[in-house]
Length: 548
Image (tube, rainbow, N blue to C red; front, side, top):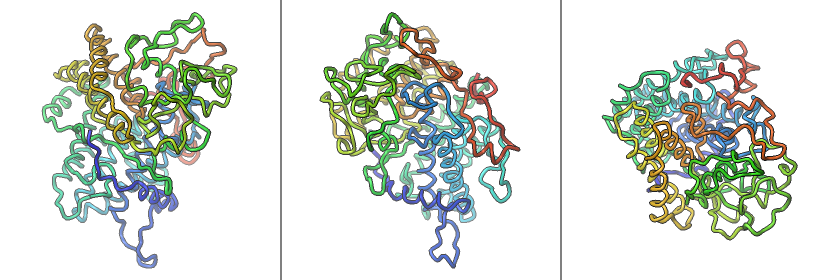
């Protein structure tokens, strides 16, 4: 998969972010002369908005994907996230909300405001598309959110919370408006290197908008009849291609910092936030349905007997299977050392910073596991290949496979399933090229894909859907919000069992119920209590409107 070369170093954008947050409600001071005010500059605001939004929606510490990765059992943490809980004052919620609203959406609103009168339709079109995408994700995470009165602080200092279904409708309208603006644009003022997603390629932005329309319709398919809309979009066939992933490519610089946020949190210093979920790991390494102290329910047997060749790209073991860990371990399988989901075991809290398995090359630009072991750090890898993917090509194909399997479209689910798996492996090989490590061989790819498809062919209709969603979950590592949505919409992939009698001292401290949505930030509850009340995320009242 060809890497887009249009990313002008994220260092510029990172620097601008500090300006953005440092100006409070004024969001950005771009005056050339502080005594002679000028209008906001869309060229400067666009990269700020993009970096802020990808941070908010991503899997780094400051993104909603950070707790979501724990909820969908790709990571475990020694935090409240590890019992299907998340606090209203969580860094991920507070900073994610601020990055989305205060910086991202605020700048997009200003871009639209200044660009439309000037007929700079390329900028207004891109801003509307990105604004629609962001609002849709906010609904996915929280449910009802400010939309119609959002980012109008002087007129609506305490904006109302619109129904999630209304926000989705508004987002679809914004996507259409953005597409229309792109069609009207001329070449006089078009984004270029300051567009950190597509480098000013308006055709790619149009395709991304239509791809997101399909994603939103799929999200709603359990509560609305969207067959006609889906059929029309598929007939157009104007979606992103393999070289047009909707993603943000991070850099390798430390001063100023522009590496993947998860790379920084996992490789900078000795403290590591994330532990690889044994559930996720065992499904991938051909060790599913193992028996621990007589308990056969620890893992999911869906791919027992099929080893996933992506493992050394996803995870890096710091210890060889024969090497001792720093301290007594709670979970170990070969060189992989980790902790169980929400365990209170005696060995959970020992320091294993130089022993535990860590996030690898894919998705954050970490270390490829060459089988030699060794402690990881900033000197073991540069961060090259770190990307925040929100809608990669393979994820779109899995979505189309889901729609076909559900009978919403007339496409062939099996063919799309195969294409999606192939696209997912191509994405990993792109990362391998950027990280300058060996690529997956076509022989290994073919063997894995054929084994998975053979099981797909033998499955029931519901089983086929489970295979589609489970492969999508594996392939979307590093894009946990998508998996969090999938689990709530389809019930797949199957989540970790609540009861593990074979693992000593395993209990769920919280409700033990998969969270229907995230709590609102405590700041919103304190400052906008007239319009929003806190919710109990484990109760059906916290469901997002598209959840069945």
